[in-house]
Amino acid sequence: MKQSSVISHQLSVISYQSSVISYQLTVNSLLPKTHYPLTKTQNPLLITHYPFPLPYSMTLNFDQQMMQQCLKLARQALGKTAPNPLVGSVIVQDGKIIGEGFHPGAGEPHAEVFALRNAGEQAKGATVYVNLEPCNHFGRTPPCTEALIAAKIAKVVVGMVDPNPLVSGTGIQRLKDAGIEVIVGIETADCQQLNEAFTHQILHHQPLGIWKYAMTLDGKIATTTGHSYWVTGTEARQKVHQLRVACDAVIVGGNTVRRDNPLLTTHDAGEPNPLRVVMSRTLDLPKQAHLWDTQEAKTLVITEEGINPDFQHFLQNKGVEVAELSPLTPAQVMTYFYKRQFLSVLWECGGTLATNALKDGSIHKILAFIAPKIIGGSGAPSPVGDLGFTQMTEALLLERMTWGSVGCDLWIEGYLSPA
Image (cartoon, rainbow, N blue to C red; front, side, top):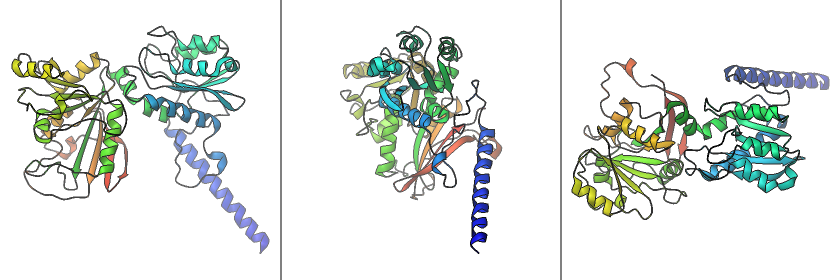
């Protein structure tokens, strides 16, 4: 009986290992091929959440842990780096962290430079971890590759290649040419997620447009009278405040100002506040509004040329910035913000403006909150207006979906499929 039990246990272990290997092969087959082959010592898996328990040896390895620390450092500058990416760096010698740093904002030294300063002379012969390929060009600051070479770094571990086609791969090649060992592709999925707005802006020449809305279970964003405080609970609203920290601007229309008188700040979620933006063709806006108080956060009102100069003058005297665009469309506004070097724009508007933003391609990512409430009302507003679709096959599709719960509410996040 004892021998039978041992054999049974061994068969169970073999079955479990086979399941793990099968899962690895399945995941790897779905991953994009990297231009830089992974070494045998690297964990090729970019997905670290498994449907069954894993033995200790298959949890995050040391390289992955250090890359996650880079991402943690980089997040300290959320909302502060545009047009630059979020970057953190860690320097390791003999298995111990000897230097850390992150990029605090445009014009400031990059993460690798701060980490090298922190490490001092100990950096010689060390390994540098960084979530984005080190730059190899002169911009507002000198190239990081030369700083790494001058410090006599032995090895550089890179989370992801720079998405800029004019830069991509040149930093890695410069380090290799200098005799530095370079490994690419550690925690790449997380690295790409952190800098998705930077990547989108580089590749598509416009900021990443994120549409956030909250609705009841029956698809309403307010009652028939327009009352909307509050659709969701405190926890969901806090999640939105955190999202605002990471965005360069948050946009609403005139109706939202008139009906809700929003603050559009990060509240207690941290700094900075995004630029608060109001789009209004008519400037038929109240003179008393939270958004005209610019002591805590800046406000920009965008209208068409020559509209209501008296009210424009009133806003400017309040410290509100005013811009004129003709025609005033979401696409024009996104172009305007691209010229201002913004990376991400959060649309928190009502159904009419959201519809126009969806139609002209100004929205790329959607975050929807669903409250377990039913309010009814055939005239109660919904998140989006008429898109002109008559067939279900015309529906806009989302991909790369994630979902979960926050407080008593649900959230769904996804990306609009390319046309």
